[in-house]
Length: 128
Ligand SMILES: [Zn+2]
Image (cartoon, rainbow, N blue to C red):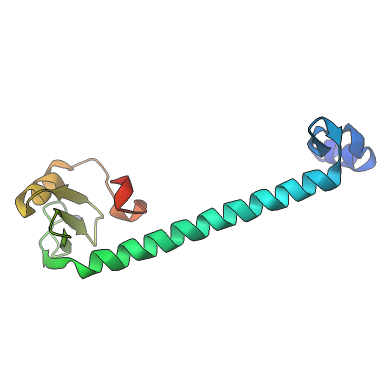
């Protein structure tokens, strides 16, 4: 490993990573990497903003906290999202379920037994 990086340090024109469009141009390669990093950072920021907006939106539609059918703790938060669907998320075990009615959402939580669901791994309503 170290041998190759030492070699490429001495002979940068031998390093395929220093080529862009088939031309040896380490500065262009560096610029491309910097631009790619900016795009990646911007995407991460957009995702963070969308997640934050979703969490705020969800709290506006909070309905109740009940006993979770999975872990038995009174940690199952239910939301009625814009009167179009119900969403249940356990604040302890992470199991979640969604349904047209409150009962359907609870049933989805019950049916998720053993699925290892965790709503915290979901970044927004679009991915449910
Ligand atoms: Zn639970």
